[in-house]
Length: 84
Image (cartoon, rainbow, N blue to C red; front, side):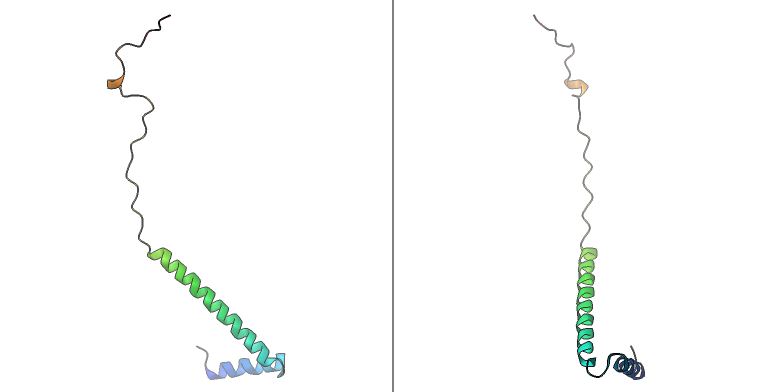
């Protein structure tokens, strides 16, 4: 947290650089920019917290692979013959 001397020094430099006529306008603009940055950072932190706090989904149950051929017990004993 900046102390009173640092704030006074920054304001004095700003007064010299910007000038007394435009200083209030510049300070308002700086305040708006800082507010927008704070809101954006709060939004990002909130979204990250939500994502990290979500319970992890259980891993899917192990599913046996799909058989491409019938098991041997279901195969006919002899291959079918063609009748012409």
